[in-house]
Length: 206
Image (cartoon, rainbow, N blue to C red; front, side, top):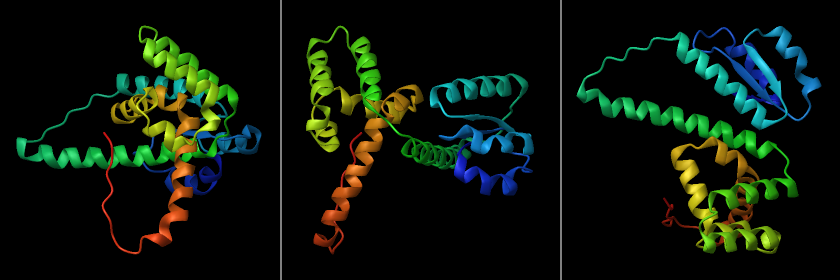
């Protein structure tokens, strides 16, 4: 389980004894503030301030858990749809949790540089996207996050692909943009909410 530092203090006493819970990872900005939790609750596997290091530690625990576990699932063809719905609920829960964690973090110009470096390597054989990447680096703050997301460039395709395929390494690299986009959408919504009193149709890109 991934949880923020502030939430961990309230949720650990309630869920620590649950047999379904095998490990807890805490992500925060001030590690010393929550170090006592690691001593108090044995299922806390670590307290992290760096999300990259956290993900590596999480991968190791998941790998070890899968190695130690022998899973057997028995269900008929008629149960597949129900099973898919259960998996969808879990996926939604984890996505919401990751979103909350990403929104708590702080980002700077280095975050933009790291994403640009990654994208240049990924699109090294695509001159058009390399040009878009250069424009993104030089003029990111000159345009709104919604503008960057809706223009036909690597941002839109990469973000949608990462979210759809749950490529968490890419999601983490794009975390600063996800946060900026989220806050900009909230701002636009608050500004336009009073103008729309009736229900209306919206569309989600794939």
